[in-house]
Image (cartoon, rainbow, N blue to C red; front, side, top):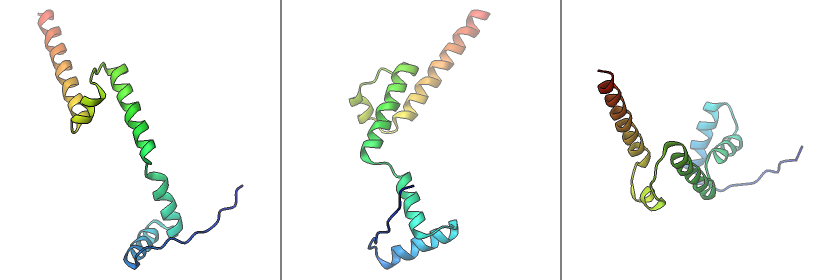
Length: 101
């Protein structure tokens, strides 16, 4: 097992006190809290990879044909995709009800 080494991070006193309070509430040390927070936060590259993967899934599995530029230009694009999917499902359901009559 690799030996961990301690490091000193300089933060304002107010930040240190906030970290201490959060760590205490969670039953951990400040160092443990900082390590936990660092593991949860994505790097720019990790975030970009998630975006690429999400777009790939939308295109391959949901038939979304938007270009990257369209994704980038739309706020809340996932909400829009859900809205379009709901409309498509409603239209499909209405069509199958009409043919069953």
